[in-house]
Length: 256
Image 1 (cartoon, rainbow, N blue to C red):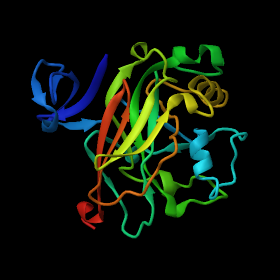
Image 2 (image 1 turned 90 degrees about the vertical axis):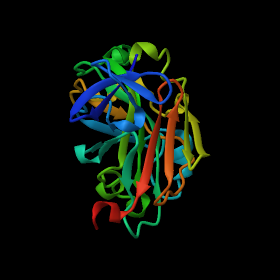
Image 3 (image 1 turned 180 degrees about the horizontal axis):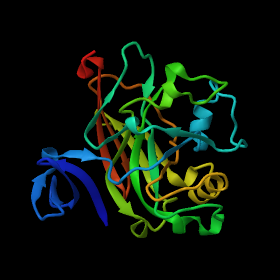
Image 4 (image 1 turned 120 degrees about the horizontal axis):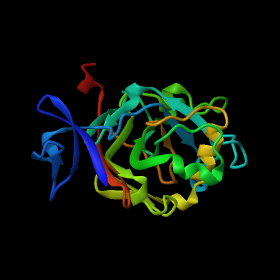
């Protein structure tokens, strides 16, 4: 089942797909997709992000970084201010030279996980959604990867549009990802190419921290990241999960 969270007529609603460019609210009303404000499709707890979790992307950035695929997973946390939903606007700071998208499979935890064995890890997954996790590469620093100014910026982590139950995703490691910028495909990859797969990530993370329902793991992005600019429409897609639309805006949209 696919479901979303939206704001409409002064309230927050759960919604499901209905027809062409429409959604059905939990109270039965049918409204146009563009008549609502799309929120992240679940109540987000801790956002846990993985860097360099696709071998091709690691190779793509090899000239800038000192990590290798043999290192422990590169993990960092993101604050709640980073999160926005489908059809949202992401701010590109004036003066940034290189800002890029990252199409990622987001794994949503469904029950408390602590010291979970790899063989049992997927039992703790409630479902999946699409993430577009932007980075400002200007601030990338070898000694601390990635720092807050690269990956923890307001409006730069887009989630949605749908939360898809784990039972409806037979194999999360057999999904095609792609990104389109203004209608042109610029990135394409496959979740089977993760350096550390989902059970490995859950086992690793739960070995030193407690994962709880609503926590989300952003599993990394494949190669093919390019610079985006103000006015660009960026679409990140994962087959069977969803099509997430986002627009880049400048500082002036925020009154600066």
